[in-house]
Image (cartoon, rainbow, N blue to C red; front, side, top):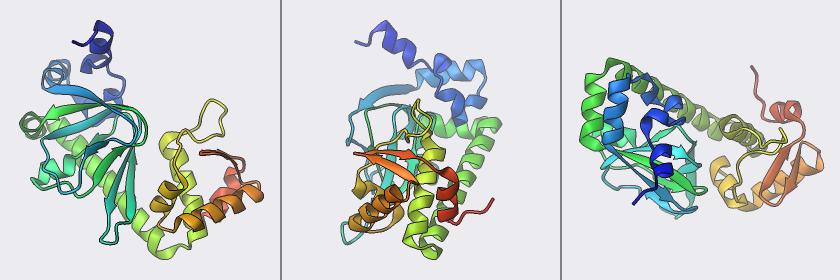
Length: 238
């Protein structure tokens, strides 16, 4: 049985993550109804939240923690498609299109995730115009990010992609309290899977960035020392 503390932490009305999600547009009554139609669970680091080709049974809402969405090619190599954090929703594309999951969702660290009932979510998305609009906006944003990632993979060299990836990690998860260390710990293999290169190349490039005083490495921790130089290396123009 959940403790009162856990019940309070997972109540939609008092959930800070909800305020940063598509459900922030719901009125008080619908928030209470949402709370009734969801269940919460915890996933340990490395645990699969849902699997590629699996059938959707609900909408996953990240309460806390970090998640990677990835696909595995015919050669068995993983490609990280997207990274998610508290307030993000997962599996909505498969739900809305009545399709199977096109990727795996795996916890990068211990996570708390709420699962909204499938039929309830689909009905709510149709009935609530504000939620429907928020979902369209979410789909558009994710599509834009996917398109940008495809362009980067096809047009930028691996050094530029590595610099861009580090900036993306910063934009997605921010820094630790020191204001420099990325609030994300990925293995060299996972970084390579996101950049679209070999683990050996990822290790070499990170070492070069470290030597050039662009970043500072300490195990899986990465401290960004020179954002301007990193941005220039990524060949990003604003």
